[in-house]
Length: 162
Image 1 (cartoon, helix red, strand yellow):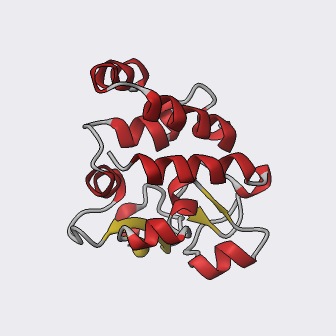
Image 2 (cartoon, rainbow, N blue to C red; image 1 turned 90 degrees about the horizontal axis):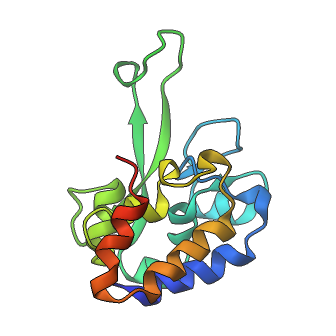
């Protein structure tokens, strides 16, 4: 497990301004709009928001580890409402395996036990779901990093939303 990357992210999340955090999405132009947001936009536009991993990919150590945000086109076929408009969004990728993305890329790139990426970063695994603040995610990251190997799987299962 790449604890050093996780703990650096926890430090970052503890200092992040609350209005810049949104656990529901990798990145967005605002909390109420969809669309792709580049690293530069995220770092310079005060209206943009991101989840923990959306922010992690702006950190030099995470970039050096091969994590990056790619683009994913959401087409009409992906949309459940016929009045919805197609758009492009951000999606996490890892250079170590370009054929994977999302939580699988996080799990593989950080060498995490099965299910841990979702428990740490997916909104459904938090009591406040979409309203979860960044410092709560930071606390959970620290808790998991401080757990022994023997405790880790039980800890993952205790949080997993099945």
